[in-house]
Image (cartoon, rainbow, N blue to C red; front, side, top):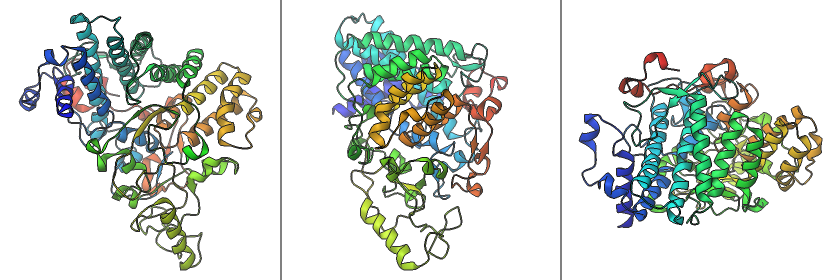
Length: 538
């Protein structure tokens, strides 16, 4: 009964007042409770927040969104796929194919550009309601539970706007933020259908920074988070670190990252190799705890990314590592074991043209060895006999119950990311010694022969950070925005990706000179919002 009530409040909190169209009024659920009741008590506001936590990984029932994009479960792997860091080995069943070919985010009419836009604005609308109704109802901000609600609401709004402005606008560090167009700024409940014009990138960042600082202030006096799926003081500092990193506020980024990871120790080797399938891992600061009743099955993170998930996306299309990056991993670094360079190419439809048998796979010269290699991988990792294998496939993400469609958790933020942010920020400040000390704990935990002093100039250290972020955060959704921040283009010539599959996505110029890195504003938004015209399109 509680789940049903919570779902109803979710629908109310995210759909009430988000559109003025007659179509919206016709499809509004008849059992939704009133906006007034949804925010009438602190207890109800927590239920609204619970709805937001679920929307991070749920198939979206929201106006303007789509059930085919289940929140971060879709967008995290997508951001790695689109820039060729999480490589598809075949055409598979079509998921993300148009994205990796750069046909998706460059088209204003696609589901992907529409869904990311509207889903983030639904988060903003709900956060606006939580913030504004708290004041309207006279709830005491000094109350620990009210402070918790406001801390989470401001953090969600900051996170959502940061996702929007870093995706639908030119990168802060490579553009002119005071004049570059960002996204509509809305501080009242309501999505941007007939709302506001595009504010500048600078204005949006100013609001993000104000929001995340308010979030941190409220969390200082808030009740403790009930679960890692809830935003917390540490998560707010993590968001602040990401925001500061993306705009070059290096000192703020370093300080916030150090605060974010406090209390979340680096994982052991055994934990790192366990599959990244639970928020109970010591490093997880923020993540979605997915239970059986709320799983999205064939729209889940593990469906898109996990080599053992029993779905057609991974049975036919195991994801591989960039071979150039793999070759940079020292033999003493246990993360190298997350990739299988000699996995047999068993898929006759593999895009590199070498799949199907030992006759086409250059790593094998007889059927016995070829078949035994596949059998060994299936036995070790728990795939089914229908799963294909492919050279350089990853085994980083593994199900708790391999070979099934059972749900697993989704990790949004880890302390390893925070070590990497602090190290990068200090290096950009010219503090190479400080950067080395910031990175040392992570490097030494992963590589038994690690020597951080080998990277003793700013240029060499930043190149090393790029390598470390790729290996440590592989598949966790950071590559797209990393490329923008570093102003690095795409060249998959020696990566193992097939040009026949990747097409436009095989080579792309760096973001500062290539506006294709900026996502199109959804055509539905331009059609509905009188304050945004075709002239405002990216």
